[in-house]
Image 1 (cartoon, rainbow, N blue to C red):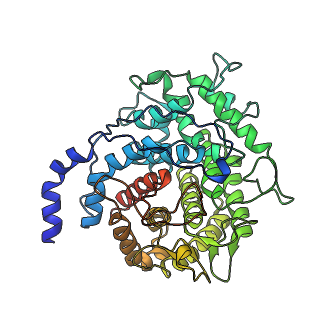
Image 2: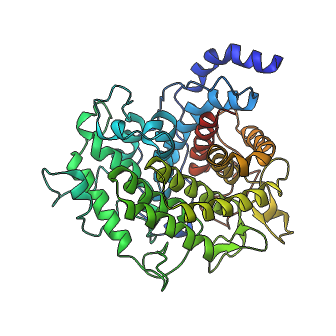
Length: 444
C-alpha cells in the first residue's frame, strides 16, 4: 500500500514526461502476408497525446505505471504503424482509451449520432490516424449528400486500404472510418485533409460489400484471404467486430447476428477442443499461437459488447461463445510462464518457440477484463492469474515506452520472440492500450 500511495502521489508529475514527443523508429521487415503491400508514409513522427485519468479504485502499481506511460506508448504505436491490421488495431485502441462512449462496451447512441452531444468527446486522436491513412483513397463516385446509413448499404466492392492479399485485415479500419462518417464535418485541426461524412460512409460501404463478396466455405465462413479460402485466428479480431459495430450503430440485427455467427464458425474450425486453444491457421501454421488466441478472444469481446449495447438477444449463441471463451482463457492462464503466455503452446519444446510473448499476453488480458465485467461468474476465478499476467506485461515496457519481448509481427524468420533483438510490435503497443482500457472499465 505504501508503494501504491507513493506512485499515486507522483503520478501527475510523471505523466508529463510520458506524454513527451518521441523520435521516429526505423521500419521493420515485411510480414509475409504483406509481401506486396505498398507502404504508406506515416506523418505522425512527433506525437503528443492527451494525459489520462486512471481508475482510483485499482490499487495496483502496475496499472498506475501503465496509466502513466500510455500516451507515450500510443505515440510509439502511431510512429511504427503501417499495415492494414495494425492501423485498425491502433484506431480501435485510441477510441477505447479516449472515446469509450464510441466503443462497444460504453457505447452511447446519442454520442455516436450527434457530434453536438455534450457528453461526447471529439474523437480527434483516432480520426487523425484513420484520416491520414485514407488521404489517398479514391472517393470519386461517392455521393455528395444523403443518409450515411443508406450509403453504407449500397457500396461497390473495394477495400479501404491495401490488405496485401488479406480480405479480413482492412475491415479493422472500418470502425474508425465509420466514426469519421459521423464526425468528419465537426472535426478540425486533425493535421490531415478530411473527406466528407458521405465519402467516408461510402468507403465503409465499399469495404462491407468487398467483404461480403469474398471467398467463403460451404458453411458460409468468410475467408481471411482474398484469392483463396484460408482461415486465420487473426480474423476473429478483424471481421466479426467490424460487422458487429456496423450492426450496433445502424440498428441492423442481421449484421449483429452475422458477426457472432462468423466468430463461432471460425472458432469451430480453429479450436482444438482437447487443449482448448486456437490454432493459428487451418493450413500452414496449425500450432497454438498466443497472439492468435488473443485475436480471437479480443474480437469476441467486441462482438459481445456490441450485442449487449444493442439491447441483447441471440442468447443461445452468446452463451455458447461465452462458454468457449471461458475454457480458452483458463487454458491460456494455466500455461503462464513467468507471468506471460508462451508464444507457442502445446507440445512445443524448442525454446525458440516457447518464449513468453508480451503482445499476445496483452491481447488476452485485455479481453479477459472485458469478459470479467460481462461474466464475473465465469471469469472471477481467473482474476488472480490475469493480474499476474498484467503485471508481467507492464514489466516488459522499457524506459522509452516500447513493449519488449514481443513476437516478431512481420514473421521475418518465423512468428518468434527474439528477446535480444529489440523487436518492435505496432499491434503490441496498441494492445497495451486495449489492456489498459479494459481494466480501467472493469475497475479491479
